[in-house]
Amino acid sequence: MMADTYTFQDIFQYVDTAVTSYVTDGAANAAGALAGVGQTLLIIYVMLWGWSMMRGLIQEPVMDGVWRLVKVSAIFGLATSSALYASYVSNFLYDWPTAFAGVMQGGAVQNSAQLLDQMLDKGNTLGSQAWEKASWSNMGAYFLSIIIYAVTWIVTAITGFIIIMAKYALAILLAVGPVFILAMMFEPTRQWFDKWLGSVVTAGLTIVMVVMAAALMFKLLNATYDAIQLDANANSGVAAMKTIGPLVVYGIICVFTILGMPTLAGSIGGAFALANASALGWSYNKIRSATPAALRMGKRAGQAGYRGLRGAAGRFGRGSEGASVTGSRASPPGAIYRKITAGSSRRARAA
Image (cartoon, rainbow, N blue to C red; front, side, top):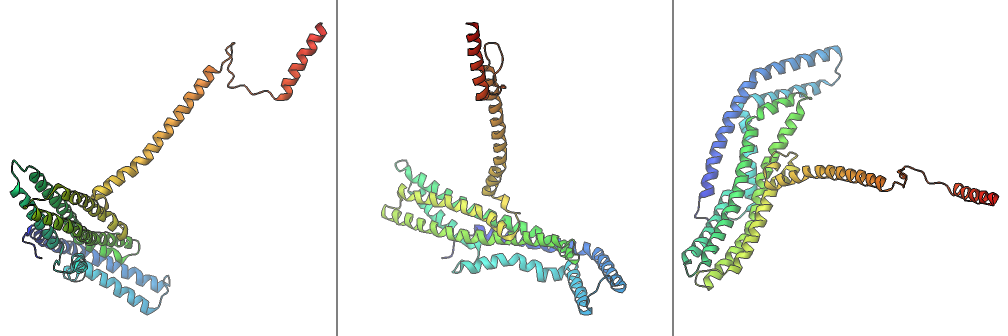
């Protein structure tokens, strides 16, 4: 079933157009700025490598050396040519999440925008039906309509927001991609490319996993919408309040499931660029940071309580002469026996 609503399709089309232009212009500017610097670094690298080979500091077969130069030249070409970068790097890395998510969905819905518009259209249809049947004598229909509208728009808006945010993050990463590709030329800076690639994969996986989670959750909402529609048809176009409970529950499940996808994608992709963007990740980080502070506060409170009890024991444990008994050592049994026997012997001599 094709959706009659084109809200998200229009939004995503505008976003894709703007993002594609941004990536193309940004990558071209970065490649142009790196051309002179990259050429200088390439010349210095070849000179130092050749000088080390001549002095015998590097011992490797000739073919290995030739292959090394070929790899360095290919990296330099990708980093300094905007056409090569767009053909082999940026276009693929930006398009694969949408294409893969569409393949995983199958059916008539070929992209995430159509999926969101389909759910939005179905929720709006049910909400408008309930609103039309509402009146002063049927106030419950107003609540039904508001709940249907709220659940539909909140779930679809959060899903669309996370997808668009991931697209923006992916665009920014791809725009500065030539810098990190050029970093592959040297071993000490190669880790920069690895981290950049991990962030790119994380952004792409976020799109894929959010779309797949939304498709799964929307199946539950679809079943609930169908139940509400059947109940409305059986009651003169107005659904009963009991059919709204599952819709609210499934809506809450959808929201928390979709909000957790950026965190899951970050753990798989090897980066956490989008993990903190979700409310779930923000709450988790707050709880995790609050736990050590709570433990430290508990430790200090325990130490203060121990010192207070120890001081109280010292005050209440003083004898009649004011001497504290807390610091005195207990007499051994032998000493106590000698004191008793010595006292009895003195009384015997006095008698």
